[in-house]
Amino acid sequence: MPAITPMPPLADGVGLPWDIAVDDAVAELAHARDAYGDTFVVDSGGDRYLFTFSAQGVESFYALPEAQASKGVADFLMLRRKLPDEIFLGRRILPGGLFRRGDVATYLSNLDHALVETVTELGDAGTVDVFALTRRLGHRMGLASWAGPGNDTGDNFERLVLAFDTLDGSDAFVHPDAMAAVAASGKKAERAALADVGEVIGAALELHNGTESNDPDDSLFGRIAAAWADEPDDVRRTGVAGDVALIHIASMSNLAAALGWALVDLVGHPHERDLVAAGDRTLADRCALESTRLAQRSIMARSVLEPVEFADGTTTYRVDPGSTIATLLPLTNTSAGPGLTTWDPLRWDRHRLADTSGLASAQLVTSFGHGKHSCPAQPFSLAAMSKALIHLLSTYHVVAQWTSYPIPVPAQIGGVARAAGPCPLAYRRA
Image 1 (cartoon, rainbow, N blue to C red):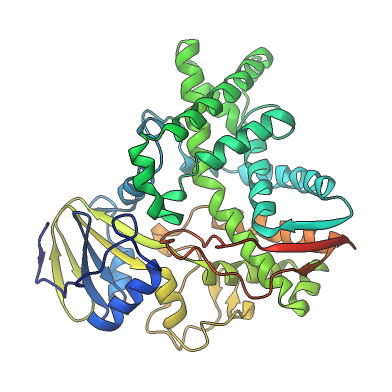
Image 2: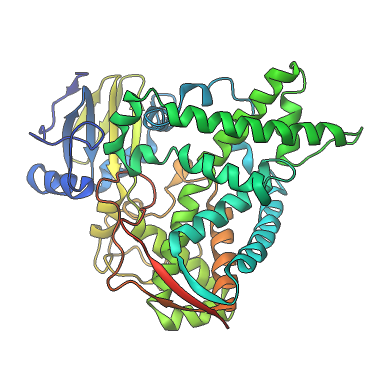
């Protein structure tokens, strides 16, 4: 194992859910924190993790330089447990290029169309699973935004939904206990799904090629197509499809889950629900932030690439390459101060906590991360969630059909929580 000097307490018998069977991944680490304090080491599956939960430890974590302790590498190492390596190789347009000036307006316009289509599908009354609804809505908006012409409706849309539900990188942290079976299969289902995406996107590229003119297409799909314009047709088709696939996988699943929890919470709070249904955008933003905070299951991780010094407020450690430095949002988000276990959207002012006086550090509580490591999609995500909440709740009266508050998938350790069971919602047109 890579060295950490001095060596913090080693959490004996604790492992992470992609290596050993764990009933509840977050609870397991909470117990370790109770037993060993705010800084401890977990050795799991041949990897060494330095966990930190103190105020200075979390601040030091967010301050780590990417070149020395990389979020990108840590994310890649997690996602490759589920996704075929070829989806990462040779990419030319990355998810970080999603948010140029003007892009968000295009995506929100596509969300408007997706919401109209969603209401058409729902009809006047019925019952729908909350998270199935928001996942399908996310697919439709995303595919309209970057998957090329004709792929957000009809047979192409249904085929892509099926492929992306199989090719879901979030399974790496939502169902980490299933990753051994994925590896044993050689990622057969995932590679078949990627081939399906390639066929559908390839057909869209042919349509796009047939309409190209001297005027550049500044849509995201147009930019992806242009990035591969210097390649032979077969290489271009594969390259464009790979870029689209990685962008969609990286962009939609957590947003759809967060929107689902915001709906769940608003259904349980009629006063706030009615205000949002009446168009209160500021409150909708606050509700989205608060539901996302409470639904966080994220392990925030940095893969150490060069020796780093890491201070937790008590000790300064030298951490060697090959280690992973990590914190866990569901623990800090609910334990850093009084009242944080309850849903209260008024604790937010714009994108920040209105009152941090009860916190040892404001960085102990977050919905989208902090500083350079905050999610670049936060403004778009909040705008999209608020727009969807207002549209759906103003269109329908909704009644929860669950008997107790939904719980997350117990093994999940990463991203926004997925519900462990069905969350049926009855609706009728307002």
